[in-house]
Image (cartoon, rainbow, N blue to C red; front, side, top):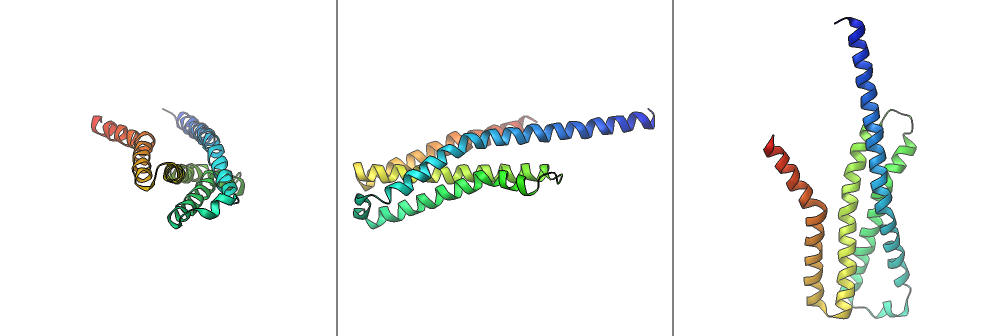
Length: 165
């Protein structure tokens, strides 16, 4: 093999790496495009209900759950939007690998914040409709279901892949 062949292989490898980074970046952005609208709508809903007359009548516990839910929803939005902001700031700086690693962590953290937000909303509605103990049971069951569907299946699948190696 000549030095020329090695250089060509190296250039093709670099190009393959760039293509892979571009593909992965596109996939990350597509996933975030699916997550952002839900968090945005929930955030708007949470803001709107705080200005209703009935909101002043909620119990202290519900007020704390509401505020924690609002904060989790805001955090989810920040985490989901962070990769786009990072990309804009670091545009054409050759930082895509770091952006993807950071964006992946932020997307996962955003799903945790979203799951907590959904759980908080479910708690508040269930508490209003049925009562506190039913709200606790429903929200714990819902969070467990969400954790199983969003994370546990993927983690267990990854562990299975490691065992199969």
